[in-house]
Amino acid sequence: AQSVSQHNHHVILSEAASLELGCNYSYGGTVNLFWYVQYPGQHLQLLLKYFSGDPLVKGIKGFEAEFIKSKFSFNLRKPSVQWSDTAEYFCAVNAPLYNTDKLIFGTGTRLQVFP
Amino acid sequence: DGGITQSPKYLFRKEGQNVTLSCEQNLNHDAMYWYRQDPGQGLRLIYYSQIVNDFQKGDIAEGYSVSREKKESFPLTVTSAQKNPTAFYLCASTDNGGVYTEAFFGQGTRLTVV
Image (cartoon, rainbow over all chains, first blue to last red; front, side):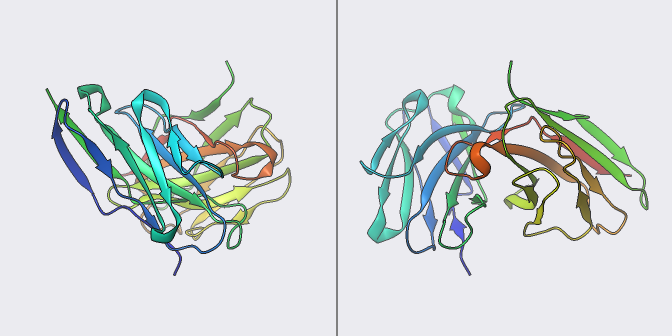
């Protein structure tokens, strides 16, 4: 079955450490890719998105993600995390070939950053 | 300010009762969605609507019902048939009836069955 996988369920880092959160999807064809973040007590908000073009996408707050088509991956990265990055991160995929209207989410990764 | 408003923020329901969660948007978006968020399971789609008076089942529609009588409103009813209704419910909307652009989310309603 088509799916979106986030293998890191809980990540704990110290401030200034580098971050990479994995996201893999199993849909063929064209995909639109998103990373959302949910800070404690706040609503989901978009970090970055990829539709086409440069596979390295830059988002807000110093985050970036790289689309690697051959690996069906869209990993999220940040060179140096801050305590304020503590949140839950969701990868999401829209695959027009399969479900034009749907945005399919991964199970999320909880990131805790300690000072 | 434009956005999505969900109410109430917290809701308690007795077993066997139906309860309706409100979702209103003033973004003039065509499409609206309801998701359920459970720990370790991410967001799962319950129902979605691309236009007024039309809606489709998502992946976990059993035990839920919706209506879309107005463009700005998409209420979700959690019926007594829903076996495990305690969860965090999120409403979202997108422009142009699709998800090719950013989806905007409300702040959610936490439903607890007591």
